[in-house]
Image (cartoon, rainbow, N blue to C red; front, side, top):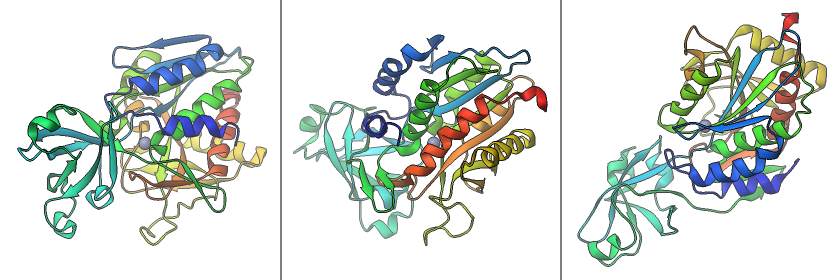
Length: 337
Ligand SMILES: [Zn+2]
């Protein structure tokens, strides 16, 4: 990989949706030397512009979200256990018995009121145990409204696969950073690298970013669920089979011109790719698509096993292919269309 230590570092930063400050600070420090313009807006998006010099230049916006899923404390029991609610979509079965960490470093374990089988997917049935002996003890460590998220190391599986917390979507942040670093400033298009907030709560940051930029083309850079393992065999997404080019998800239909340019560039540059279709979930492409008079939209997606868990798995090669595709797309002269 180009700079795996950066990807690892990004995954290990705490950044639950709505509370992206630590992620934002790291990204700002990383990209400032490479940006022609860099700004932060009121909701906390970080936007870096690298100007192009083509006669018919387009405004290309890439969006990767800084936030990760987690849980918020909504009440504290007399016995010191914490009632939680969702910050983004969580699967109770995945959270059960897992380790979580709060922003202040307090750690805990997710438990269930009764058998997990009976919890179905109700987060109401889960609690967090931080080891407190009673309510007052818990309140010394955690307040109502504090958030926690999955806690665990970045590691390698066989076959060039990476397993980590928060790959959704620090992996996209990593891809944007690397692509920005490789943008020489001599490309035909103005390229906006947007590190956005609160995707997991309904693609909020990307909408605000797109309204400021008014891009000609908006691309979400994110993960997408795999269909190549027994958990879900209902589609064709396969890890290690190339970067996913979004065709359609329940929230957006990718623009046909965008898809055809991406496929052409992958063929011309030998970038492994696959057509990505999912019938659950969505990305920031949805909100970018529908601002103002509309934006041509697409997605660059890394196929991921065990998404929205503490142990998501991706292929390092797919991650790198995504950066290669971004670079080629940023350099494309769209006046040919
Ligand atoms: Zn995501």
